[in-house]
Image 1: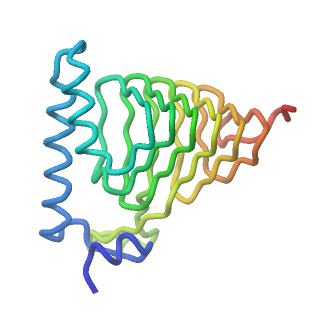
Image 2 (image 1 turned 90 degrees about the vertical axis):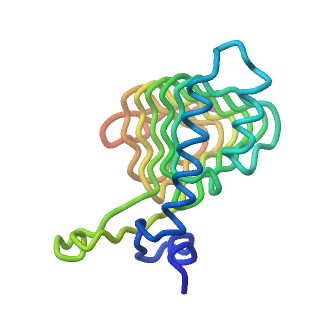
Length: 184
């Protein structure tokens, strides 16, 4: 069984495997190219981003800088916007629905490391997917951790750390994030 296969199945894998390292290197170089393009070079930015992220449904705009690990496991719905400093660690799938707006300095982290230090010291890790619903606003500085699903029509308050699923139609905030208000 390959390390890539184990990675995408949520099993322990070695991220320093030659194949995974080559995939990350390709992606990091494309991110570097994207981040160094002139701000108003929209056609080239669009072209480079389409090489980074495999599944983009429609219109999108991602402010520079942007970083991700592979790009292969990211999908974006229609009408996606992210402000500056978006980081997506995507060994597992990260799926964004339609009409998702993300504030500056946000991170989506599917990677996890073993709690047992001996196992962790071997360099292995595992990943769990993240799913963001439709019509979601994520405030500045939010961090979304592995395995989390955020429902439709949700607002996540600035500075929150989302460690558990958030149901639809609500406002959530805090560290860890919790529902503070239902909407609709």
